[in-house]
Length: 151
Length: 151
Image (cartoon, rainbow over all chains, first blue to last red; front, side, top):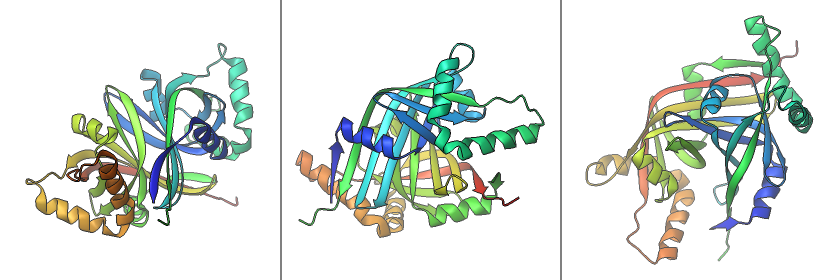
């Protein structure tokens, strides 16, 4: 087995193909990581949906984020991409057009994000709860691939 | 579909069954997340192997970590557990017995960790490079389950 870096084009290909990643943020030097469903837009944007919770509260205070996306077949056959970027909340009215664009980009995963939204509204009996759409502006990304080497 | 918290016992069950997670650390309020292979030991310890790289350098400076472990079938059928804990490097001679214990716990995933170690040695032509075994002392963990609800 060999572990080797992959190109920026291969990183983009993985981000296009895989739509579930793990998003890390930090506050007071404490890290927090959760799975998210995302849509990648080449070359340097990622759209994500969330209801307001711990990660949104933290990213509003510290917009530095790290997204890890992988495809793991087994211990000798995997890809992993790590993206560093900045959180930008697509709040209205400033980002109405960008927010609409994010909703469209995420439409195919709508079951994923509509359900927690509906539940959150049900739990707090507040129909006015708004979903949060945000963008990650990618500053850098790098990836590794492990591949079985018969030699 | 319903999203609901799972019990501590269900969190433990997932950590016992799944051995790949995403480990987040932070330095200067910048988050970093990478996949890791781990072994869980009930009730509150996790063993991990690594060569020395960015994550080890960061965790040596800031031992707060967050490990996310999930099992994602599809957008309406998944589990996710988030563990908060503290990094403890099992360095010799202070932790020789604990280090041996970690090696044994991780033995079944040895292809995963022996290969990067061998390669790192090859790249730097330094046979003396030592693998790093570390323990995460779990401070808290919580989990969510999404389940398809026919109603």
